[in-house]
Image (tube, rainbow, N blue to C red; front, side):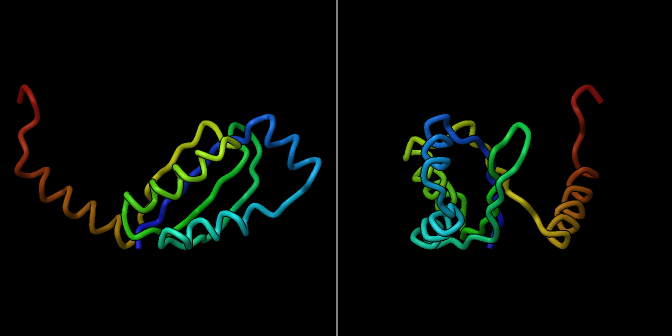
Length: 110
């Protein structure tokens, strides 16, 4: 299944609420992913521009988007970015396909 990496920020209200009542968000996110047919690989609190990072597997983009939109709809998250990730084997296959296609492609102005 394709792997998706999402990262984002907690709203100020979410941070205040979690400080007042700490909770394990990994459990909630895992349940959400499972409810739409995905699987949580990992959930991490991060430093810097993003507050959290989550890695999950979903059968397709539509399923991944449904989980991410459901999480965003709760109002505790902002600035969410999601990236589709490839394994090393998938990347090698993709570079091979790109190389074959590049040989037949004429760049603009050439």
